[in-house]
Length: 404
Image 1: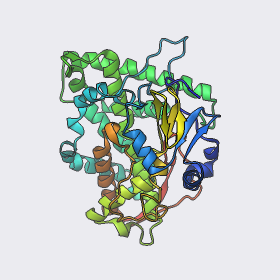
Image 2: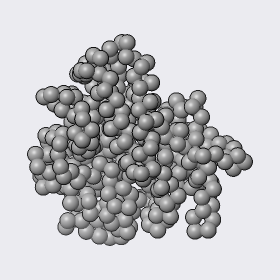
Image 3: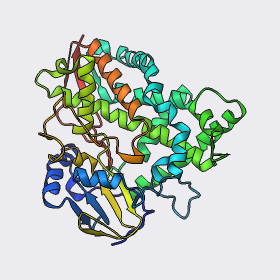
Image 4: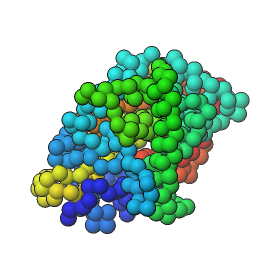
């Protein structure tokens, strides 16, 4: 069954091919956990892993289940494209060496001071729509807020942030995007990578000559094992920070509003700080922004009695693991004060999400600011459209009406 560990993104399972299934994949997850918790999908040429314990074990064994492969679809033979080398597609010890370069700025104590500024940015976006008594959570807040925050940290000029959002959206788009072919999606992803690399190359040269207090300057002047990073590693760092720095938070904020709107008391249930902190963790479990990640087997091995060959692709469904009744009581009910809550929304092990603390902070501050500004808020559209991605969970628009 061996497949190439250097292939592009894994396609979406047939079971999740419809709008309804992508909006609500959880019944299928339950069916898979009960009937085929580990299965080989011949159409997608990969293994799927659904139970919490199995997902956890794969994520904690990078020696057997490797992350080493391109971040996005590889460049084709006709294009002089580049493949970003990042922490996502390296294993220890190189992964640990790279992570140390930017670990400190994303620790809880380091991001904590950003809270007032995040609140100011959130208020600016609310001010732009408050007189309308309605807004699209995705377009008006959940998308621009994390892009602004991470772009400021990286050192991207404000006038270029919209372009950066377009690049990141393209790179994470799934091959089943409705309006174009899978081949077109791959070509657009390569083009976005190339344009982003060209932009960052110019910005890197500027920072080499005139360093500033931003992550670009930190990365290009950092030393790993006595030498600075290669150009590919530097570009990979910046691309990863940009993309991972906004897509997760966008869907976390949006999914939170969806979850809170269904509570019997609505946003009243989660207005205070302590309740909101637990509720955000429950959103991460219940509607995980990232539903799956993939690995490649480095050796012939076994997983719960199944023979895995070296080179086989393994897709671990953390979105399913977070609904496993062996780990969580009443897992298909949103419990805003659930505790403990050992979800796998940010992964686990050496690849635990670098930006997890920043994403949590942005979500809590953005949501608390919304609640401070609005007396009531409810979702005003029922026919939601899922994001076009094989591994992200969210909706393209979330119109809400509110009163102040």
